[in-house]
Image (cartoon, rainbow, N blue to C red; front, side, top):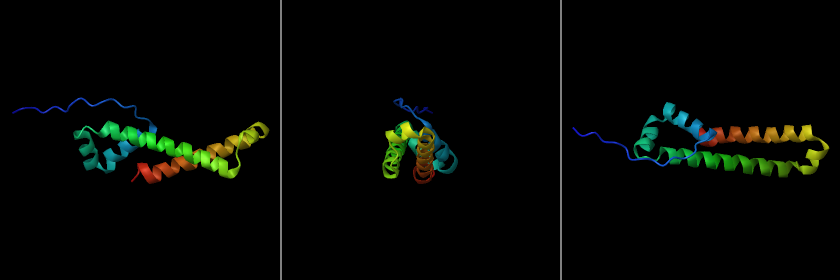
Length: 104
């Protein structure tokens, strides 16, 4: 009986969203998780998810700030309001990413 070994997989940096997606796949989409793992595409897939989610959050926050008139002038005049609005935009973007990318 011969033992089959998976080939070396390139290392990718996997961040917050990649790890959340991995946990979701391991718990709720086991077949897909094992398919990615055995085809040596898991780390690349998780890295792509992470990058896409980070880009989405950054773009979403930028657009919301622009739409609501949150700018550097507001940051100078009323920093606490600026911080509150920016945190709110980030939280909304995070929830959107979780609902539309991570947990599907």
